[in-house]
Image (cartoon, rainbow, N blue to C red):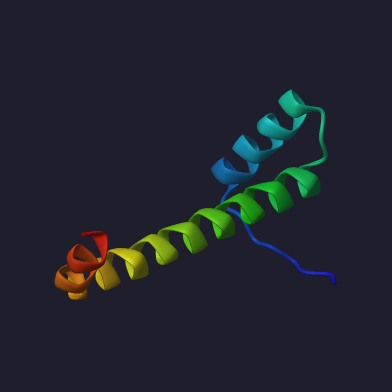
Length: 66
C-alpha cells in the first residue's frame, strides 16, 4: 500500500538521523516507529481494561484468591 505522509521538517530530520544511525531507510524507520507506537497503544489499552475489571470485581477476585 502506498501512503504519503506529511511530516514537519524537524520530525523528518529526526527520523532521517535515526535511520542513518540504525543503517535503515527513512521508510523502514517510519514503519518501525509506527509499529512500536501501535504495540504500546494496544498494551496500554489492555492494561486499562484489566485495571477496570480488577477494580470492578475486586471482591470476587479476593474471594477466588482465598
